[in-house]
Every structure is written in C-alpha cells, then in structure tokens.
Length: 375
Image 1: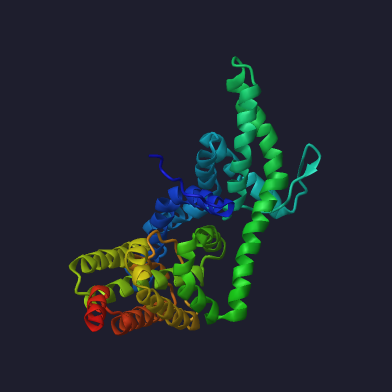
Image 2: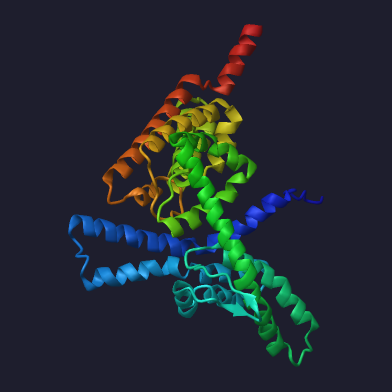
C-alpha cells in the first residue's frame, strides 16, 4: 500500500525552507541570549561589575552571535539548498567584512566590474545571506556539471565566487536588506497604529495560524527584528501567551473529563505546551477535538494579549521554547516589562482555564445522557 504524501502549497514549502535554515542556528541564539540575560541580571543586582574583565568578555562574546549572523545563515542556507557550506559561509562573511563596513560608513562609492555596490551594512540581517545561498546553489551545480573533471576542484569554487560576489553585493544583498527592513517596519507600523489590539488579535488567532502553517512565516521577522532593533513587541509576546493558553485549555479538559484516556492525553499535552511550547498535541489531541477548549484558548489569548499589549511588552532575546522558559527573555532594565508580561500570561491562562471548566462537558458522559433521554 502506497503512503499518501502530504500536499503542501508553494508558500508553505517556502516558509518550511526558511524555517529549516534558521532552526540549526537556534542553539547559538538561545545560548547568547541567556548569557545576555545573565549579564543584565548581574549588572542590575550588583553581583557582576560592568567594568570587570569577566563582564566585558562575556559581553562581546554574546554579541558575536548577532554580529556574525550572516555567516551562520550562509552555512545553514547553503546546506539546505544543496550548496557548499564553506562557500555559503564565505558569502555571508563578505557582507560583514570590516573593510566593506568601513568603506560604507565613510560613504565611499564602490563598484565591481563597473556595477555599483549598494552601500549598506548587513551585520544583523538574515535575508541577504539567505537569498544569496539559495541563488548560489544552482549556479554552483551548473558550473560543477559543465567543468572538466580534472579542473572541477578549481573552477567550481572560483567561478561560483566570481559570479556570486558581484551578484550578492549589487543585487541580492540589497533585495534581502530591503525585504527584512520593510517586513520589520511594516509590522512595527501596524503595532504603532493599532497598539495593544495587534497583540491581542495575534495572541487570539495564533493557534489558527499554527493549524494552517502560516506561523512558519513569523520566525524570520522575529529574528531580524531582534537582531536589528534589539527587541520585538508583537510576535514573541503573542506566541508565548497563545501556547500557554493551549496548555490551560487541555488542563481544563483533564480536570473535567471522566475518561481516563482523555485525561492522560490532556495532561501530557498540557505539559508539552506549557513547558516545551509545543502545542500540536494539545491542539489536535484535545482542544480542536472538543472545540470549546479551543474557543476558550482563543478568548484567553485575546484578553491576555490585550493586557500585555496595553503594557507595551517587548521580548529582548531569542527563545527556543515558547513556553514558560521563554519568560526570562522579557527581562529588561525596565521591570514593568516583565510584570506586564506575567499579567498577560496570568489573565490569558486563568481565563482560558475558567472558560474551559465552565463550558466543557465530558463527551462520553453527554452521549450516555442523550441515549438515556432517548430511551
């Protein structure tokens, strides 16, 4: 019997490809993020002197992750596209070479083969290296195919770079920079115009985005915004609140149901959503199945997101798990940021749990009562 292959649209495949390029970088970004949280807490508490050698070393070491981001992206994107990882890293490094950055800052007019090089810096952008690696893959494969075997080891990297360097600096880099810039500016414009409403709507509807796969379009924006602005006020906040609400809804079902199998499934799914930030077991195994818990999570998301949005909550570091362990990434020098986030989480979680307990009726018990009434 042949297995049925899941049909995915072109846009879903595109988002999947971006996600697969970014996910290998998460250990780097999470690690440096929590080093920066440690430095912040150490400085605020006075336990770590900001002028000490330890603080200075950890500070520039943690900045390395974002400064060399194009190199990391170039490697992972090249691997995903089937290109040479070394060449992908090199192309990423070209964007952030100190000489190039220095010339751009001086306002020098650069060109290559008579083609003007767009003067901008790329040290905190992921899209230029991402696009460059994807374009480089077919170029490299074409050169490898046409090169004589005896000369391939030389011609493949040499000709690939001779084509890709001007293409990256004159065309692909600017396109990627504009894409990242305008995506971030568009979301921030929406946030400025709608305020807490945008956070509320995203927190309420995020589970629906997960069900359609559209949520895979958000990590590139989130990473680009955190790297370029140093904070992100919408997606991170809404994601954490929504995920915890899915866990709350599953807990509500576990507390109400008389079915031991449903209870076991609901508790394990709730644990996955709350601790690991993985909501699919709670959504598909419990909340979508019984519908009312899903509605409760949506309402809780709308209200919890509104509270956090009203407090202008922002995330300051990259998190890997959008559950309770993401909360430290909302710590900043402004303590009210974390307080408002906790308030949004508690409102969303508590309201979701309460609505689920009130509205959910055990399915098996309801069916038995209906059969009894029918007799």
